[in-house]
Image (cartoon, rainbow, N blue to C red; front, side, top):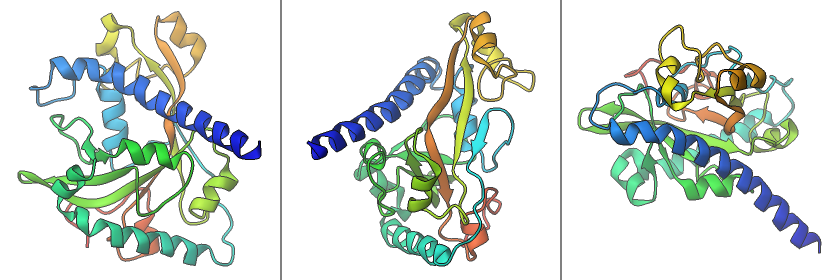
Length: 253
């Protein structure tokens, strides 16, 4: 009985996590399908694409982060073990074509981005149940000529996972997980209002509550995707490896 309950609890987490990805991806991809030859993000794509591809994190009302825990004995060693495991696994993926062969798919390939996420949906589902540093949800690349340069990874966890479980995966005294929150998806006829510095909708928009979103005819999502943490294993120091603002393009080791 306990095993059955554990299975269904895990399945519920997977469903929640996959549902957030699917709902957001479906709504945002509609414009992309019709605008795939354009060189700039289109209305409706902008929110998720910009939020995921940026190399810095906006600490406004659309972002939440885990608190920074007081260091405890063994934290640095545990974090370094994650880095070492990732480095071993990533040797193969320095050639992005190997990543694609192993099931990683680029998110919005034709939309220019500062950082591209190659995501493995199978690993995303698995991450809801267990943490494997050698099987990151996403590989992070920068565009380099006609190909891509591998710079890091993204690990994910269910949106409802408490901090102590996140800490068990990666010490919270070293890394801070983040989540994109308070998203108001615009109605179809107002998608352009998700663009620009005066945006009303999206993860850069001024709407941050369910009440205001519904008044404007939008669809409110308290949290889009689950918890996420980026890691840049080719940097030289712990601070840079787990930094929220990694080195500028071209300065990775």
